[in-house]
Structure formats: C-alpha cells, structure tokens
Image (tube, rainbow, N blue to C red; front, side):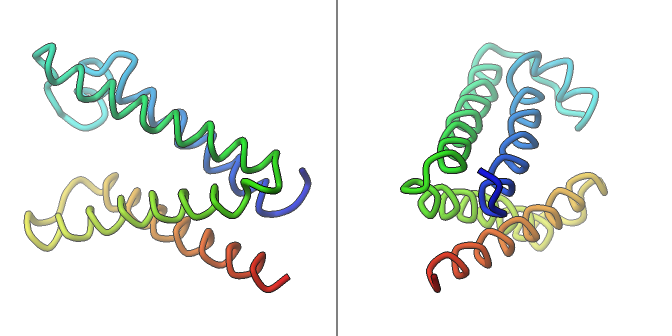
Length: 128
C-alpha cells in the first residue's frame, strides 16, 4: 500500500472523515463555532448527520480503494467527482451569492487541488 494513489486516498479520506465529524457529532456546537450556522431543529440536525454519514461512507470506500487494487480506480473516480462537485458548488455560490468566509474559499481551493490530483492519478494508472 505504498503507492502514491493509496497514500492520496488515505490522506484525503482522513481529512474528510474529520470534516464529517464537524457536521454530525455535535452539529449545533461545531457548526455554530466554525461557520456561524445555527442548528436549532431536529430536522436540520438530521440533515447534517446524514451528510456526515455520506462523507464517512465515501471515506470507507476510499480506504478500501487504497487497500484493494481492483477498487483503486473507482475510489479515485469517486474522490475526484466528490471534490469536483464540492469545489464547483462553492465556485457557483461565490458567483451567485458573493464572497463567503475565507475558510470556505480555502476549502474550495483545496477541493479543486484534490480533484485535479485525483484526475492526474487516474490518468497515470490508466496509462500503465
């Protein structure tokens, strides 16, 4: 598991796992502190915990892709699509809604970088 694709999947997976916890473990506390978002209903807590579950499910798939070679390209594709979707959604929000906290801009840059790196790794594996 010492190839760059596996290391990338694990590295990004660990990061996304910890981000997922901010959404779902104590949504009102963490989201209020980090993003100034008030989570004040069971329905909103449910939505954020579902997002946490989705993120964790993808992390599990990425870790499996790091371990099992036959899952590596599908895991990289899902990571690349996931990061592209987040980054493009944030870019669209900047165009439509205006400039958010600098933290969100930093996340967008990181997401674009991870999407690009994922795509480069996929292309490298497909050339072999």
